[in-house]
Length: 501
Image 1 (cartoon, rainbow, N blue to C red):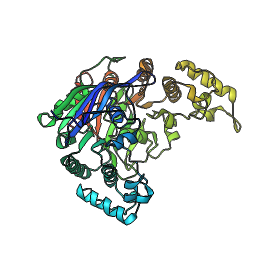
Image 2 (image 1 turned 45 degrees about the horizontal axis):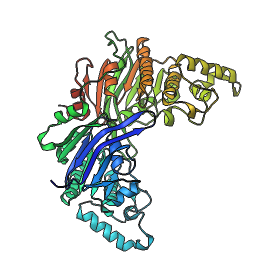
Image 3 (image 1 turned 60 degrees about the vertical axis):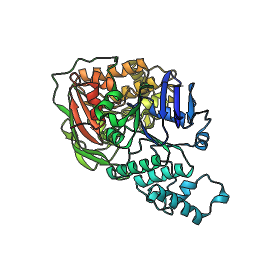
Image 4 (image 1 turned 90 degrees about the vertical axis):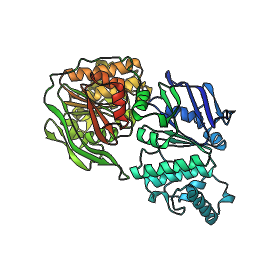
């Protein structure tokens, strides 16, 4: 039996706060093959690849290349050994040319422009990576930029290429072209590790597949030709696990409070992120949205909150059209937004606890041109007490709060105005068991008081436990609606992966 080009054995990787990302994960990749690594969000795929790429060092386990054990101290060490990772977020300098980006880091004495452009052009032609070596990167499409990233890896003679969600920003035509490029690299004897949630691409592009769940390998080196999308989806999602809450479904809902009609959006590159989405949330109802990360959930939430422009469609709260309204006007209309990026969008890390607590309502606390400090502190004390936020000094920096307490403060602040509609995006991500239960309790209690809740989450157990109706988004569209009590995890997994009729 020949040595595998890559073999990861019993990899354990833990992070501060008791988070175990990899729990004895295994992966074996043969030379000249395209190997898919699959799993739900949070399954440990990217962490495992970061171990292979030298970004992380595992606490336990071994990494071997061609049968030789390795211990990478840095990504540079992994690259020197022939392992290169192409990340979802391209690492290119827009003002540099294709050639300059490809050769970045080379010794200055080797940088002879005409010669380099010829060499880069020859390499691109060899693998069908159609590009213009002298063109600046800012002029390129997303698909062309990805080719530059792959060229960078080939320029360094990578024998193992890790492609992390490589088609996330590509058009269907560009994704098909990538499949051809990947096949050409494998035919050249290189090993390609293909991380993706798109099962159509996995079955079309890949030779074998390994599935991770909960940080561990649950299926290794499966021949893709012998599997269908339904079986892959079932392996990814697995069986139901225990959840902290099992909510009694609401059958007697009120009038629609949030109505979205024919909403479409594009990102700054012109790629469609939300495609003709319509949905509604009624009083007392929790509507869940499931989907693999990057399928339009975040743009949709930001559009509802007024933080991202829309191309077409309408958004209404309590029959009031808020499509042209500012974010603050939407709050005044009865909308609350708990963003997934609690520090980057929801809270201001450089402000203290009191200042963050009153961000939504400081205008009501003014005395002339100044904020009434006593009233602000009193409001913060009420919020901290009502939502069990554990803090030291109220005038202390936000940095002193744990993730769970940051989230309690954020949720409490957003709900203090008694909103009609709550849009909660990934509200329990990164929290411990107690933090998760606390936030789930708050959302359930809000629905009981007649608030409509739109819950966007990558935690399928959470969605199945809390939602009255479950919608699934794929490639910017709502592709399925389920009764959480009547659907299986495998069915939801299939819809998340696009495997729907």
